[in-house]
Length: 139
Image 1 (tube, rainbow, N blue to C red):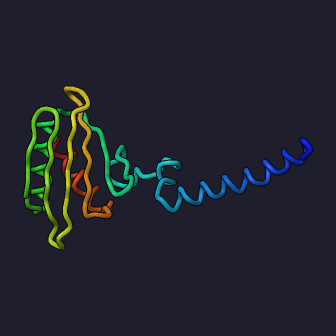
Image 2: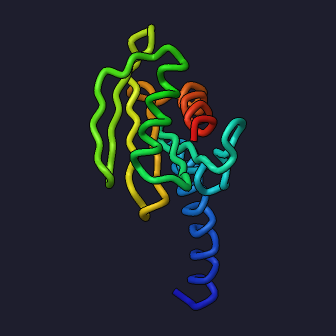
Image 3: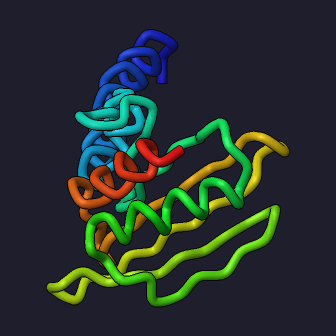
């Protein structure tokens, strides 16, 4: 092949490859991350990716755990399982329509924590945001 033909081939198939990668990212849900979306209504700093709502808060793990338990109770959600220490905590609950709720809290520093909320196997963004908002109001 001549150099001009190679450039033309790369240009043509490079665009096709880019379109395929973009389409795959949209179908897998990664476009939300690529576009920087996901903040939505409610808690502005939280990101919703692959069925999980994640946020970082300026509070130690035990305080975030207490706030999360209070948030679940205020939403009339039972706390089925609870365990934690200064480095990590896990909570489990269940909605009236039998969707499991998982809340995971991990320490980033002594005064900063990461909270991850998942409602149901596939995720439920609206309910996850309600739980996170209720937790934030109790911190």
